[in-house]
Image (spheres, rainbow, N blue to C red):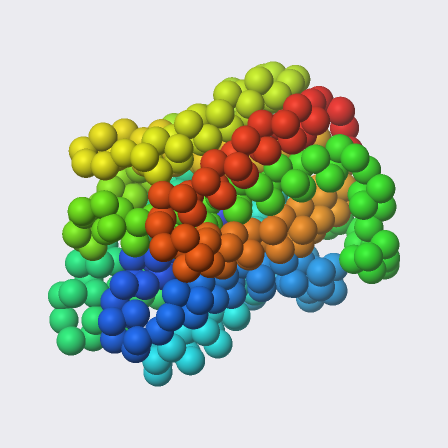
Length: 387
């Protein structure tokens, strides 16, 4: 265990900043709306822009991967992420939008490269490494949600101060990778010359099931991360208390997902686990749509458990079901490009449904429907058939 933690420390440091700087926009939306008078549609675009970059960047990922081996490409990506976090704070809405694009590109590269890094470096501990970095990602996202609103209200720097901790963490991590991490990978994967559109996995029904599962899951996650603080405010929470609830729920879900890939690696079939937690999701968001008061703590926490456990398994499926590192890259590219295109539209759709109905409870039926659909997709995605 100790050796595994030491081995994975480089990617654990990176994963601490892969979601925190993205999802803190959710708690900031009420502040940005008040300060700049932006519409619900503009708020949706601010949240969806990084996700669109995730998907579009994946199309170019084969070209990006030729910039160097796995370690070097990760070093480039964490440097771009750090610069983007800083530059987002330089002006106003325009700077948030422009540098959300570069932030999305950097995180897309890291989303794609970390499973490859695990495949190359953690053959005997792939499940545990995946579980830990997924848990660190979620736990730091929880911290981000908890401290964003208090930091934003702490000084005249308002929302800009909330981004400072993640810039500092990014700068230290980037410096570490450039100085301490070898410029060569443990094993270099021979890159295919084929284009994104010639990916042979586009003809694989198994690859498509994993991709759609990942897409549905991220549609739920990013729509919820964007709008749940706002929804909770309409149910009587203050901005700070809404942020704390979402943070606690994210932390609980992340910690429970920590060991999931490690224990899942001992299984040959993931269908029942995925189905059970997908049902958790549907029930939880239905309860959020009809309930109020203190009981919302229970339903929000259960919903996040469903999100993070299934997310952790989805990450592991890329490593588990791919036959080799080259297939891992191809599946990771496909899953991210298509999956994040799906995720991009979900905050916009949920915001638009609120515009149409004037009611967040009815708008949440969209997430409930996604969770129900995820149950059926899990039947194929969770099998043990190699891709």
